[in-house]
Image (spheres, rainbow, N blue to C red):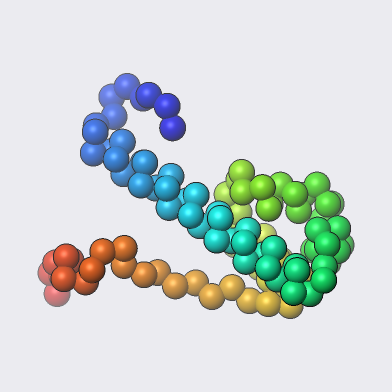
Length: 101
């Protein structure tokens, strides 16, 4: 993240939490993909072939160093004969939220 001038401590805290969440999501995603590869006895080269991309591209995807598009995620799911299920869960207990509804 680095030191940025003109950014408030609150914004820095939000960015730090965002970075932590991104790291968690990348770890979860790569763990899931690797599990599916193992369960199907597939290599990264097999996955690349099924996705129609280079093995290097699969390595980039699984390194977690980039933001993936929904299309890339769909390609991964298709290549693994699987599907992603997305679920947005509260990170705090429900009683800590205040609804205006």
